[in-house]
Image (cartoon, rainbow, N blue to C red; front, side, top):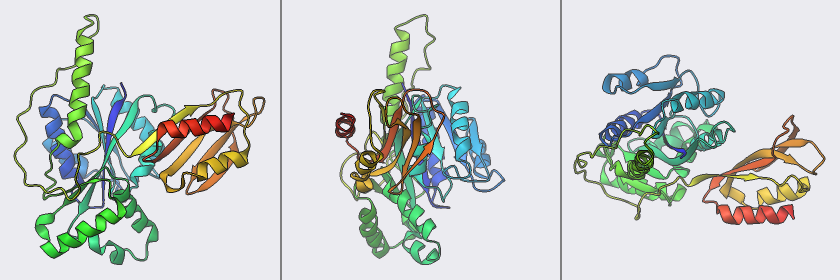
Length: 339
């Protein structure tokens, strides 16, 4: 089974590390073995020390840069290091200025795509300051875009620090956030206290299934059985959006192996990519335009397509990354393109 990945996103000081600590405590109570990757912009490890003081779990750290840009090349290696411990769950806490959709892209690294799956993106929103971001950072359009993408790509929005705002401000935020993401579960809270079953219930189920399977084969060493945790302490919460949290992230990755005998034109492929508009965030892969030709590297991002030469000699393939894609529909349309 692929290891599920939970990404914790949110601007600086929103309460991400507090949520991570609560998540790890709950995971431990449920008998899960989480793997942890923490990314910090600075050269000194601050949050990692906090985590070590309150948890005995090993932490893989990426310092002095952001995993969605300068540290991206190191992320795959860090994930492989964590996977050596055979975790039931991988949690990645991003820097406050990271774009979560870039992590979805990074998880499609050929060395990782069969090992991990993006389960959920959780964005912690600072209720005290979120309405002021546009005026605070009006000179930095890229940062404002990143903060919006943190909200837009989330499966769960944790509206934190609601104890520090009045009802009028709460109402404004409750009207603002659905404009950017009306599909996420929106949870107002304080001190990052939420029902962690939204994140862990299906992970516990998967871990128990793994135990049952391994127990059925005595020659295989079984994983540690999941313990029965005490129920969560009651927390007063109000869902601004109805419905349960999705089991899987709205940001999906769909991989297609391509027929070696197919022929394509660049124009047809580019037309295909643009037809999905804002639902398709990224596409990349190695494509032979004709069976006898070389494999070309295709990159699609920001509605721009680039082609470049490559030395790839294996099976041609393409990976799509998007929001609310229909994998069956996408594959059917691509196969029609092949014909």
